[in-house]
Amino acid sequence: MNGHHDVHSDLHSEAGALPGEHPGRARNPVVKVRDLAWLEFEKPDLDDAEIFARAFGFTTALRTEAELHLRGTDPGSPCVLIRRGVRSRFIGPAFRAADSADLLRLAEVGGSSPAPLPETLSGYAVDLRDPNGLRVRVVADVGVLAELPAQQPLTINTWHDVARVGAVQRPPRAPARVQRLGHVVVQTTRYRQTLDWYLEHLGLIVSDFLYHGGRRERGPVMSFIRCDLGGTPTDHHTLALMLGPADKYVHSAYQVSDLDALAAGGEYLRENGFRRSWGIGRHIQGSQIFDYWRDPDGFMVEHFTDGDLFDNTLEPGWAPMTASGLSQWGPPVTKDFLGLAPVGAALRELRAFATALREDNEFDLHRLRGHLKVANS
Image (cartoon, rainbow, N blue to C red; front, side, top):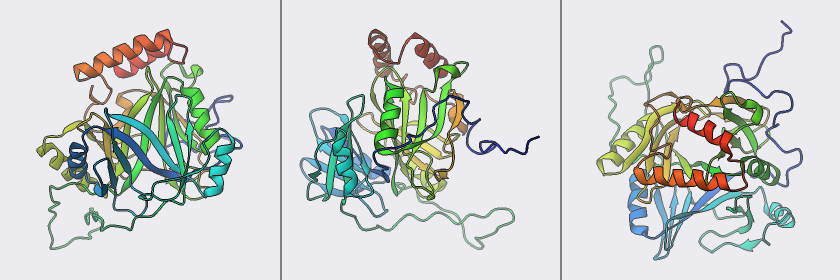
């Protein structure tokens, strides 16, 4: 033995990179964003959107005839901005810059000129387009909403650590109070180009790569990407990118206090007629306890708790991508989560396969076979 310790052993993924594989970070990024600020959507029915949002655990920060802002209990900006539109669509993410000087740097490499945000948000923004045409907004000096009373985690007894005596556990079957926005997952037909764009422009770094089993030499098809805050630990992923037959939003995730809040909140959603997509379980990459739901417009949203945190010293892990490998425990992954149900979603996926194979992108026949193998694993 040479005494070398593999930092990935029993830590967060199967193994580290092989020689010549993607390093998972840019040498000299334009800026290093600090976090996700919010996500922006358009929806035709703000009433339905607000009803679901309250059941999911958001607090309304602003409501007008044309706009809905949703927040968590943590101080900061709203988590989600929804504007009235003729159809439901994801507009794009907003990332928080370290300072306003970063906006000038991004403007010099193809972003718009820094422009003031509406008074309801304050601050300034630069808009960029990623290789898929998705609008990516970077903001600075935005207003800070005051902290709200948070849902406290339950006091838990373990065998040798008794913290609760003479009291019972009765978590209310009520909405789990969202604390903050955690991450967003986006699918792209130009995965490698898009990955490099986010690393080079926003200074994000990869926590984990996934590749199609038996095809590692063709490179990764998914990456879990975190912010680079130096020695300060941050979420395992703030953004996740995956190769697929269409450029689209996949899901977004919002932190709650603990497993009981997540589970009881899920029961509240179920009893109020909302549709679970997949859960409850615990992920492998990121380790979060998860529960996925569909809002009235079909967007997938996740409650999560107990996720991994890493500083910038951890190098990317590499692991094969399988459907069964998406969780350590929990029910089998559903067709709804994979986008293969209901029938309308499956038909859209088939049309996307046919379109992608006719166009110039990374989703070729080899990737299609790997994609189908994952879905059937």
